[in-house]
Length: 200
Picture 1: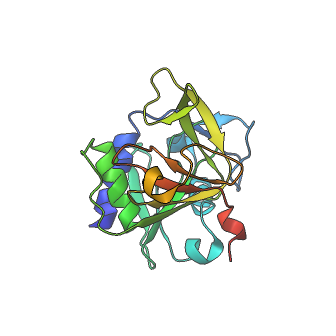
Picture 2: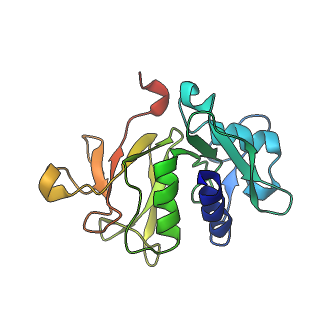
């Protein structure tokens, strides 16, 4: 069930995503030649996907990559409840994610424009290579319309309905490295700027 959920999310997402970078056997760094995810080799996509999480998570995580038809398919079943994908936004730099089943449900709801996420427990997702968000007039927004893309450092997330008023947490990136993204919406969640690869 969980694998079908994430497959639905990611196949749908291919319709709106541009490209990411890669080269050779390892995922490339920013500034390399841009290639579409579906054009990458299985080996490169797998390496990129697994680079999202700490080794202890990635080791037993499931993997989904793009096939020759441009659709995402499962190449390895999860043995620990986490699934890794090679990109979230397909921007011109790597942004892979490794997520548990609750985050898969959260993402499914978000992609389907559900009124609110339906995961019944907090979800955890790792983005050890960093990611990006849309920002407009200094506020992090859900839509890219009229917004600029802002890069984020390596981080992890807790997908649960956090509220700034209740938690006293900030609603934008700040020196503390912790903030609530999408504050005021049902999809508000906790962002933690901490490199998952260095977590104990």
